[in-house]
Amino acid sequence: MQEFLNKLPELAKDKQNENKKFFSKLKNKPPKNLDYIMQDLHDREFERTDCLECANCCKTTGPLFTDKDIDRISKHFKMKPQQFIETYLRIDEDNDFVLQSVPCTFLGADNYCSIYEVRPKACREFPHTDRKKFQQISNLTMKNVAICPAAFNIVEAMKERIK
Ligand code: SF4
Ligand code: SF4
Image (cartoon, rainbow, N blue to C red; front, side, top):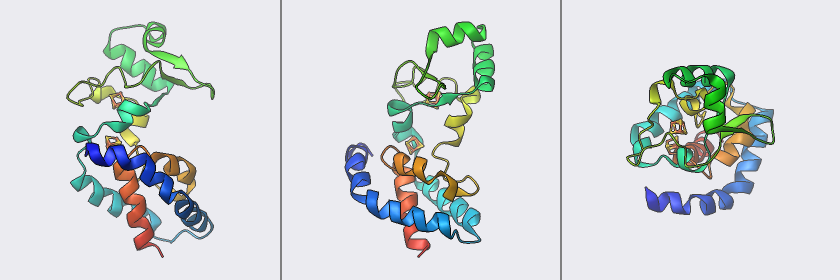
């Protein structure tokens, strides 16, 4: 896995133009069964990808924290939301709450998330490859293929499946 992760930014860069063309076509004319195709490709990929061997999203990017996330996680720590914000978060250039630093503070050395049950919604949904109307998040996906090996493989499989 580590070898693949090391090569991933370069691999994603090589595919950038091809992916741009593919997603622009997909946006204009998404197949009627795109939601079904994505669920299938997502399930197949995550049958063979073990996030515990990877954790690259937790190590390199980190999620946005919504107000609901902050309420839920601060309650878990028996902290006041404001205290949680001051301890762990900052506001980014888009005015969203994000982690003060990466790798994520809540990631263990064994790649387990110490707040898994209450983790942010963005962590639960990453890399968003099973979401409905996948064509609407192509810009985000083009960034994610450089971080997430599963997203990279799913996009490669999409290009094979949707000609
Ligand atoms: S909260 Fe958990 S799942 Fe989310 S980035 Fe941190 S370690 Fe990863
Ligand atoms: S979601 Fe992607 S980047 Fe995150 S741990 Fe799983 S395979 Fe790795």
